[in-house]
Length: 342
Image (cartoon, rainbow, N blue to C red):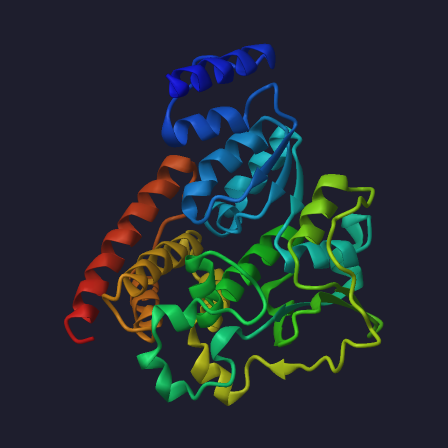
């Protein structure tokens, strides 16, 4: 009886709000709601390629789109940006790194390429920053998910441990800001206080700082172009201590995080390669979390899948989804082969 009463009350609220009373179920319902005329702001935070279709629906409908789902750009790339432009949507990044870069860039987008020398994405280094690379084959899912600074879901926590999360962020930054891939850099900053930086042609660097709390980029997206109260604690510089940095491409870190370099490889490969890389990684991380493959085999699965495709440029969502299916199928075969030798 309680369930029936709750359902009736919910239906009455939906009707009073003017929302459609007949909606699809599952993924189609999310798309319908994201593009609904009654919605003005969409926060896109579905993990993985599953978030692409509702992001496209919101973009085509001209919404204020707060993008936390990096895969919409990693997988969708130009297709997604074309939808944003055609629909007149306002695209605001919510990932802390991309929000930081957006805050540090000039308001006039047309001057970005001429004035900016480099985009510098910061990375914490995750839970294995000081761990010997040769021991990572024995890393467990629990260890990989124990991020030192951020509380996140299991998939993104593993991505942080492999630095694939940062690789996806490099691809996202490339599409978001229109800066050449070779001018996007990653630096390891263990304290996660500087969220990212923009280096200008004159050598000056503008950085955005804050405590590691997602309330800040979310509030910035909600309030933009104004700033609203976020509820996050501001840094206390009297007690903050040292801010340190490490080169992500040092020999030790290259051995520790081989997945990071795949970002630039995928961007230089035929269109669609970034979607292939993302699909492979989702399959490989799921297999690791289910204890089917070792931690170091996540990279092996990603490497093999990326090397096995020479895709044609996808022209629409259907072609992107078909490419995603093919890449996942290959990655599953690779995972099964790796599991046999794990």
